[in-house]
Length: 197
Image (cartoon, rainbow, N blue to C red; front, side, top):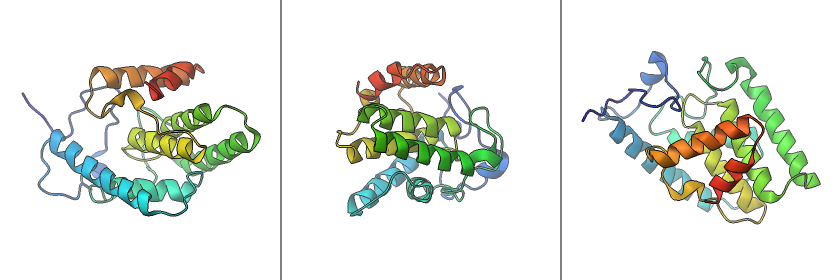
C-alpha cells in the first residue's frame, strides 16, 4: 500500500501548490502518515499554548492567524499566513482578510444579541471560517478548534466532532464533509448534530 506525501486522495482535501509544498520544514517527512503525525504533534503543542493563556479572544483575526501558526508553524513556513492562491474551495484569496474580519464582526453580533443558541453560534463560526478557507491547509482543524474555543467561551463543553481524528477517519470524515455541504446549502442542523455526536 502506498502513502504518497502529496497525493490528493479525497475531494475534501485541499491541494497545495508546488510553491506551498516546497515550504515543508521537516526534511524527514516523505509520507502522508508522517506529515499527519508531525502536524498532530504541533497541534498538541498549540493546545498546550492555549492552556497557558489567561485570556484569549477567539473572535479576533490576529488571534486566528497566531493560532494557525502555533498549530502548523513547525511544519510549514506559510503557517499563520493567509493564502495567496486559488483553491478548489473557499473564496478568492484577495477577499480573505476582509471576509475574516466580517465573520468575526458577525459572530460578535450573534454573541452580543443571542441571535442563536451558543452551540449554533460556535458551529456557524466554525463553518463560515472553513468556508472562507483562509490558509493553504489546516482550515478544517483550525475551524473545529476555534469552534471548540468559542463554545467554551460561551459556557458550553468542547464539541466531539464525531469523536474521531477527522484527518484520516474515513467514514467519519465523509460524514463531516457531508454535514459541511449541508451547511453550505443553509442547513446547519446536520453539522450541529455532528459536532455533538
